[in-house]
Image (tube, rainbow, N blue to C red; front, top):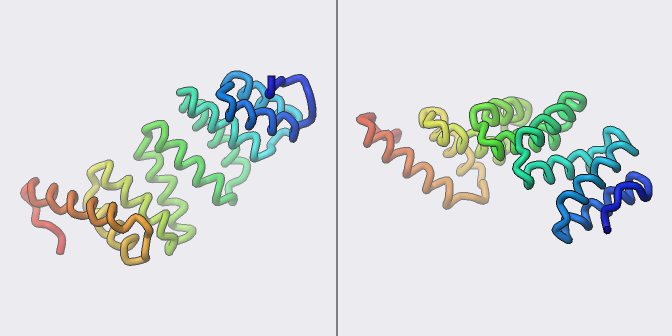
Length: 169
């Protein structure tokens, strides 16, 4: 009942959708987020919420399409592009996510979170020659996941040695 789609403006629908999420009412929350988007087209918070709801309901491909569509209309919005890249990760599309994160990293080459994301995705894709230096850069930049980065670097070194290749110094 918190997310009845026929009542209120976009803000009220958005609030109802958020309350519906908190109450566990996924279908009602999704309907309210649709109504908020209908009443205020292009409103980023409603689009973000809808994408989140879609991802939670195992409609990850639709969530990715929604994020991509919004991102295409707002190519200079860094947060939207990051959300799209994360949606790709959530959909298991690691190579596509890495390319999006690489594009973001080109625009912000000192961003330790982006360095880490590209390094981690590269490791996930067994591209260790790319992953190791990026993870080392993230570590040297003071990324808060230092212990996890060291673990990943150790695993990469083991894989390189185990695969008959010398570990990087």
